[in-house]
Length: 377
Image (cartoon, rainbow, N blue to C red; front, side, top):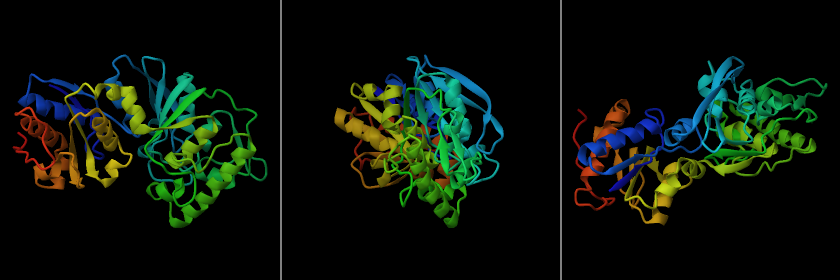
């Protein structure tokens, strides 16, 4: 029996690579003769590089030293080069919110991301946009490629959203070095501005108040007009342009295309090709709910399995959806959410055992099937 283990990360508790390993370990302890393959997944956010590295043995790591971090302090940022020469860059490595000492909604910048894109030297690049610290519309990225953004007096504007607020013109005469094939990996359909825009949707988690959001939203709308006037046109209503505080828009203005993060990562990891010949796929995430079925990684895996006629089981930290898909809740297994989060790896091992036991008859479990477990040892 060939089983693929393709979970997303369980955010805040365990990454997808470790989650896949734990599930596989539990299964192997019950059914050690099965053909087990770990294929951890991501949706284009944090952890995408680690997922691709785990599934791509011929890939290679590189790093740019002392690029501009989101708050101006230098950071070292990795990227991954796949066997075919495509570079994969993760925004969180250079411009992520986790790199901030404290939130700075107007000062945080994406300049470091642009510096990494220049440093990687590949003409084919995929950019994973999750975990952004800023709402600068990609201003920092464009500056790294030689674009000047000027205020009303013709002086260079500050970094971050503060620069967007001050921006009144854009000079592209120094633009250079943009790769010819850039794809943006994201799982959000947020647009650049408005109710479903970057500031409204993501501003609060980056420290922006309601008043700040209104100012940022107006600045993002003006930013789109300024870039268009400078010949860098992009559609601010395109889904995904609001990703990473509008960085998606800035990259599209440089010629990038937006790709569904889950779909593209499943291609790059080989999962899309591996599902049809599999006998079972075990996927998972922190919370399996109705949003999982509308664009998230687990929903994409379920769709692939349905189209291929391959059984699938979801293992989640918590299950809060009525579905025909069999699902195992770590919270239920552990007797509570805190216990499940504190010992996520151990309960994932137990979940792997439980799902394997349900296959003792050789048939996939149903959504209503009872799964027996024992406490982690």
